Image (cartoon, rainbow, N blue to C red; front, top):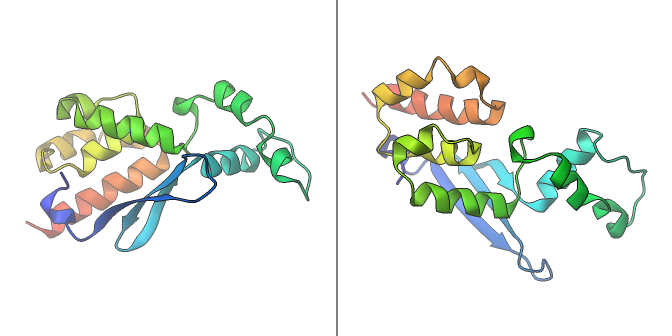
Length: 155
């Protein structure tokens, strides 16, 4: 469902590693470079970087993951900028089963991302979003900029 201007420029990838208990890593590539990853690892690293989890180096694997689920509960999706593979998969399902205009206004930033990249969202709708895009997470602003730049380049 990618916009024509993004064909060959945007790619989605899913990797499952042996021993990950059914978890995957979803990635979005812009121009063959990883733009964003969605996994437990990216969320836990975010918790550490934001100092939500206080850990000392070096730490064992169990210490690294200690408290993860408590932090997931304390910091729901709308308060962070990193997301799990499950959140990505749920957003994809929502996007695929919801009207595109509802997706543009979704509370879920990942659903909004899919909508911004969607071919059913035209230049006028993108222009209307310009006034509110500054209130979006920085990564979503970058998605918007990537799409609008491509639209301008393909007049």
